[in-house]
Amino acid sequence: MTDSRHAIAVQIHALVERYFALGEVPGARGTARIPLHVPSYGAEEVNEAIASLLTTRVTMGEKVARFEALWAQYIGAGQAVMVNSGSSANLIAAEVLRSPFVPRPLRPGDEVIVPAVAWSTTYFPLVTIGAVPVLVDVDPDTFTLDPPAVEAAIGPRTRAIMAVHLLGNACDMAALGELARRHDLYVIEDACEAHGAQFRGVKVGNFGQMGAFSFYFSHHISTIEGGMVVTSDEKLADLARTLRAHGWQRDVRKKLDVPNPGIDERYFFVNFGYNLRPTELQGGFGVHQVDKLEEFIRIRRENADYWRRAFARYADRLRLSPGREGGGSRSVWFGYPLTVQPGAPFTREDLTRFLEGKGIETRPIMAGNFRDQPAIRLFPHRIAGALPNAELIMRQAFFFGNHHAIGETERAYVRECVDEFMRRFA
Image 1: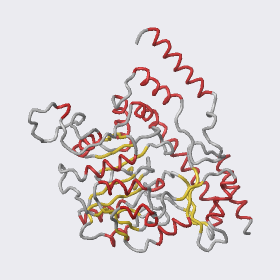
Image 2: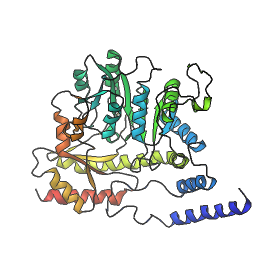
Image 3: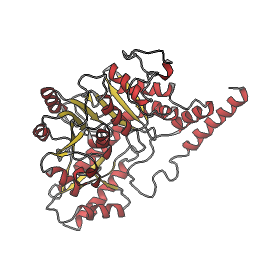
Image 4: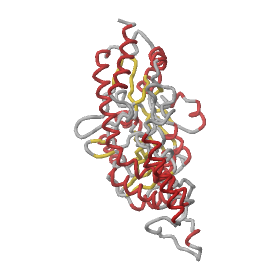
């Protein structure tokens, strides 16, 4: 870079810092007083992205590799492979397990147990590889797979469990792990909403063959769009790198044992593949976001604890989630959920309309009971049992925003609004 270009770049860097030093960016909260999320990035991330743009080194490269190393270190996994979204991370994890290079690969028609309450991209990657999702009921307190329901659903074609750590609550990985060992099942962890969540002192993403994270705009930390596959198996990580980029071997650390009949190694395709690569802009964001995550988690946990204590008086009307706590486990609270008790003198819609009118954004619990979604008619699946808890969540539960920008004033406002609503039914 020439001296004149360098001088201009320094000026741009300083202007970006001045811009963010003025305080919260106008419009960051939209029109809501308590939005579902606000941007988690600032001057550092923007300047990192601008630096990539100015140098024109924008496709997957050194910054992505740095973020991968930082994320692997944070999670405690041996390997991390960044992709362009959490949905792609789930797809890569599923595709790796159907690769001919793994022992006993998944085959079309094999069943994978999934929670009935999740996001659509828990199910669709499994359908893409030809697997059959088996919808199983969930624990109404943590919104995660109910181990007895999982055990009852295991059949002769069951080959894997997709453990979804919904809303930042860890699944019971001891019980699920025991079932997986007993029945010789693969485990994929969908941790897209559970950055830093722990089960008995171990961060989620470390319990199965592979784990998937999302860095979408609204998540605990963000690369705007982006995802990560983690594993402690170097071979699985290299298969993920191959699948991420066209099915070639160019980016792997250890070559697969595939004879090369004289093909240029740069265009040597050995496996299935997509183009799911992230950019250096996303990698640059991630490098700066990792260090912020624990503080963001602390704030979310403090907020959840405050609301849990504040709303305990309404236990006859609201079911509160205790999360997955104690014994080294911790929830990281993607949002704060409430379930309206079936016998309450108001409906979920009554409460959410009131809160929305007060500027508090609300959402259903992800896709609800996916059995009821029209899209399920488009692919083979199996329903295991009546799914009463999933149905309760579908009809009675919702969540509101819980993030790093909610402090004492904001969380007290939410409590005051709920108290005002409840006084109508004193």
